[in-house]
Length: 570
Image (cartoon, rainbow, N blue to C red; front, top):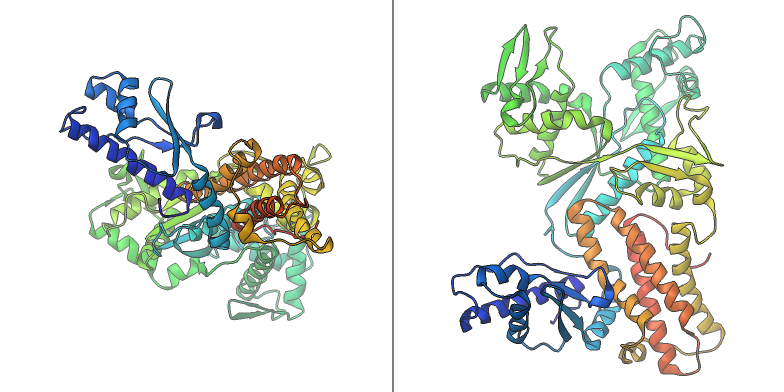
């Protein structure tokens, strides 16, 4: 085992088991033509069972017509010798439990220090391009808390994919065309004409928040807004609906960008829905679907045979009045991602969009463009309920009908808001407790994790303040104590980090990172409570500080993947 990452430990343990199976075949213990089963090497849930476990013997027993425990013993004897394995034991019906030797743990600790900020990262993506689309809010008002959950989940997916070696493109899709934009323009126009939402002439589907008045006032005052290099200036003419529409969209895009910047979220690509029409991409997509024979006309409408691709019924593409249904530009948009070289396309959406997913995928398959069947990959998030003082918080005066993301950040802080919004599976309902997020207590998970990082930084300051020396090389050279349970648990958690990064990337579940960070912080707290660090004996002091610094490094690496600060003081 010549690599220091835990992922390599697992893979090489798997290789050792495979070699043992080969040896059993060669010895006639297993049939020569018996295929190697798809066994696993994993960490036992109960750490007292060892560091790794495999079910290989149990899978081999039946085809080999052997007792599983007898085959497990034979497999142990066939394993190649390896200095990193201290013991191999048989457990239960035939599991093999491996315990690593102290030398393997010591190399793991050195790997954390040697790799630093790179520890846990891998090159699995091999630089291939993955486009991650998230937020994609209509530019019709301030971002709400649901957009905030989308923002942090999407941003953290992008960070985790980057850590797994993907070339990530972060993308925001602006729905700047359609009925909602028209309602926005008419709302701003009504305000510009002096109407209020309580007046009889207010648009039936108009937006009622105070921000509409802000936009109207800026338009009348001749203000200018620059977004992505384009400048929109209010001309003060309340009858010029087109000018109002352009100005309002630019104004609100700029406002949303400001909200996202305050949240630590940025994008590489801003894609406008209107460009799909302006550039003829929607018409081009429809022509492609017609040419490949997956459409038909009925009742004056153009239909797509989405049932050919697993949908429950065919879908209307172009209505009898000549307008397109909303999934058609979505197909054109995702086709553009494929054409732009996105080998993977991950789209983060609210769960209320689930109904359109099958038809978008069907439309992409119907184009016969070589797009993989699973393209794009969707991550759907559930709603957020915000609580304060035991009561739900729903409204914002500025937005009129919902709590804005900016309101939440101002109350709970950026770090706590990001942590709480990403700390659960996206498909689970989320209750955001503002009081807990603001509290400086160990019940607050983000405070607990940040405090652990700051506490280790404080130890180093105390070394200097007390005039003590710290030699990290000496610390890493000290033998580990296999009887120290708290040390062993902490080393195990440090070693799990590369596995967590890989799993979060494979499963597109960044909440695995926050779960891990809290477990690592708790393991460090246990070790911290059981050990003195600034002792007189240099070897002991150096060894414990070297371990603490490894924890600090991994905490910092993990906090970076969820976009949360790693403070040196608290």
